[in-house]
Image (cartoon, rainbow, N blue to C red; front, side):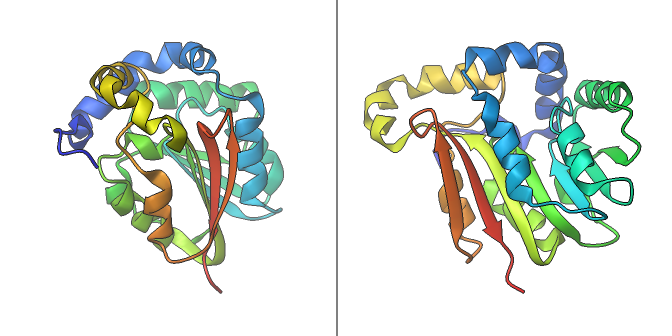
Length: 219
């Protein structure tokens, strides 16, 4: 990580930023050319089954909730966590529009969350890079999983071949990301995932900019 001060350590700042962009978030996804199949692939990698309980960390506007809800069925549950009131309001609208009865949304900080039971799978959907310390966030998520459970991370990064080219522009990139979707160009998400000690399965899109990483907790 960079030695530059990271504003993501201030949870009130994070909440305010996401509240501010909640209404325009779909526009930024189009601006950043997020592949349409990225979310579908992340949901597929959860391998959620009927009756299972799935956690979505940083569920945002809830765009992935309908697909996960369909996978777990009426006897399963999908729990969505987010700091932003406005993001959760949008997620609630999504749940109502799709008549989702198995969704539970909670406004909380991940580090203060303690599930009653372990989850079958945990998802970070474009949210890991909004955490000040992804290693700690991943360790928390890992502890929420039951043995054999899957941790899936959908996020973006500066592709390794582009790191040297983009280095002079990092201050501008960093500023722009902090004003929009809070992605952290200094973060090394795959390195953080490898620290969990289990093999990481990786799918990349858009020349390596977007990725879905999957880690399965040992039985």
